Image (tube, rainbow, N blue to C red; front, side, top):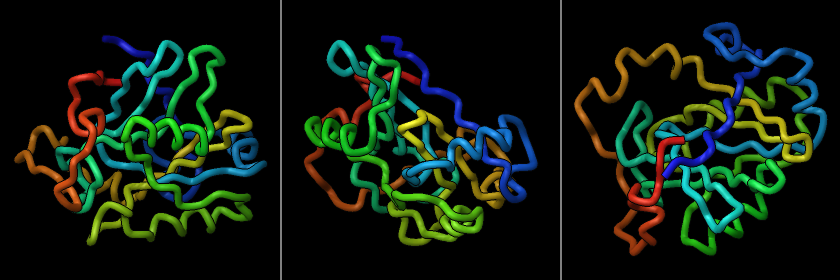
Length: 198
C-alpha cells in the first residue's frame, strides 16, 4: 500500500538552526507563512508514516515506538497523527477538522502549543525551551508552524538537537519509548500494519 508522501517542510531562517544544512526557507516565504493566524505544533522525533482513510484522505502520523533522540516516557500511543490530506482538494485539513476525524478513529493528535499571530522571532524560539508534552525530562525537538489558510508550513528545530546526533538511531542500541499507562488503544494507533512510510 503506497500513499502520497508528506510534503517537505523547510526550516525557518532563524537562529543557528536556520544557517546550517539544506532546505532553509527564504525570507519572503517566511513572511507569507507568518502573515496570518498560525498554529504551532510540537515536532515529534519519530518516523513519518501514512495510510489511506476512506477514498479521499491520507492520514500522516509519527511512529514513536523506538527512541530516536528524544526520550518519550508518557506517550498516549505509539502512533500520533499530525496531518490529513484531502486528495480531492490537495489541501491539508485544518486542526479542528483533522482532530475530529482522528478522534473518530481513536488516533491521538500531535500537541498544539499555540494558535494566533506571531509578533516576533523571539516568540518562536521561546517554544524550544519547552518540555515535550510526551516527556517528563526532555525538551521538544522543535516546532512546526502551520498556516492552513495559505497552506504554508515551516519548522524550527533545536540547534542542540541537530548538532547532538552522532549516529542514526538504527545504528545504536534499540530502546523503546514508554506509554504513559497501559491503555486499550485502537490498533490504528498502536500497530504499523495498516501504515506505510511517507
